[in-house]
Figure 1 (spheres, one colour):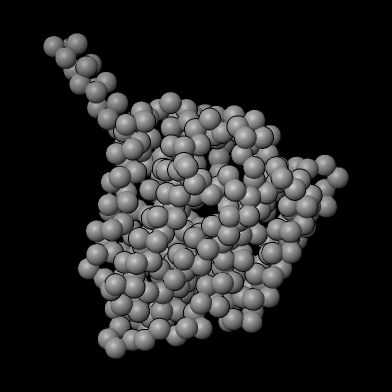
Figure 2: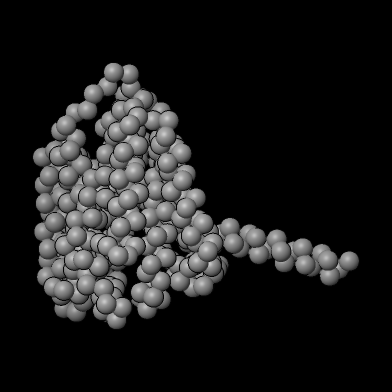
Length: 319
């Protein structure tokens, strides 16, 4: 009887652990910079008129982001191991077959949420799905093609997600029509996300070289990459101001000194780069909460989960 109870307890613990590892696999912290431009786009598309639906949008972008991050991990496992990424798949907590099923379920979930909406939103979601796949999966693997990786991050992570949020809101308003000025507003986020991406390639430069990835930092060096990224942050702030994206403009103002500190450091300090990126992501997300106050809830949940998971499961202090 005691053995039976012990076995049941162990099975329950295993199930809970697999569920928790599955949540960690979708990278909750990295969902924040996906949710944020979607929420701001949603605000400009109709959220400022009092329409609801932000939770459906967060669910949609969560599914989309989970699938894209999953594909990335599936095909980048060796690099993640070398760069000491504390993620479940690279650590061997989840099997490849299980990971593939999670990716499939995530993409399917995104399509199901988008399906009842308008054709424009569905096309944008499908475009995001395709871009996410070709970014990481062979034979195309845009992430290993220096300039294409930069463009893909700016377009996909910044512009496209913003437009998905905008289209999501617009679909809920009768007889609403696209304001094509939104393309320029989305472009501001494309510049911002491309710039942050440049900085993210620097800490991983050694691991990327070992696995043959030709990122911007690998090809052009840390200093040039960071200098271009800093210029991009400045341009993102300027375009944010010009195109009335106040949250983006203020985020650039706050984060520029931290990026400059990382660039001007005598030695390349990955911790300074990581600090600047964290500040930029968090500040933009918090500014977005001024538009949609309930957005603070998923932000808080993502941060709390990451902190507890890394401390309890992995024994590391993060974020």
